[in-house]
Image (cartoon, rainbow, N blue to C red):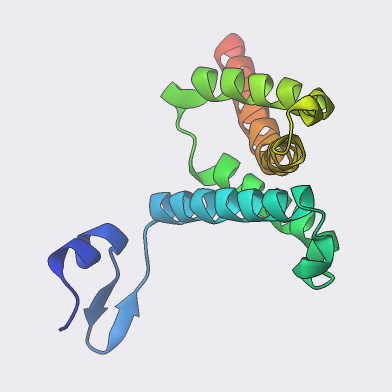
Amino acid sequence: MFYTKSFYTRFQFRLEGGVILMASKEQWGSYAFLIGAAIAIIAGLLSGAGQTGALGGTEVWIPLVLVILGVIVGIMNIKDKEVDKFLIASIALLVLAGTAGGLQVVPTLGDYFVGIVQNIAIFVAPAALIVALKSIKNLAAEQAM
């Protein structure tokens, strides 16, 4: 096979009997995070540049895709020991997104910062909601015992 060992260990796709075995649940969550972060940054840069037309009319679909990817990340990626750190970081990011308009005062780069922060917040908010609900469920289950 022409793939290097690092490619194989990085992506964990295996070929057995002519069938490609898919990635594990944790890997799908990681892929969803990477794809969501990339989409949020690229869309934020384009909206910051005022180039929403460059998105080809997909600017309506980008938030929906970011929300779906955020839900996937919240369900698959965040482990019980990471809940507190993730929720604190999410709160900080969502507060920043709420005041992102203040970043426009930064000359030249302000609009880009605003676009990126707002798109990342759209991506992180559903993940934070899912993780918070899972945390509340776990707390309620502990109280019931």
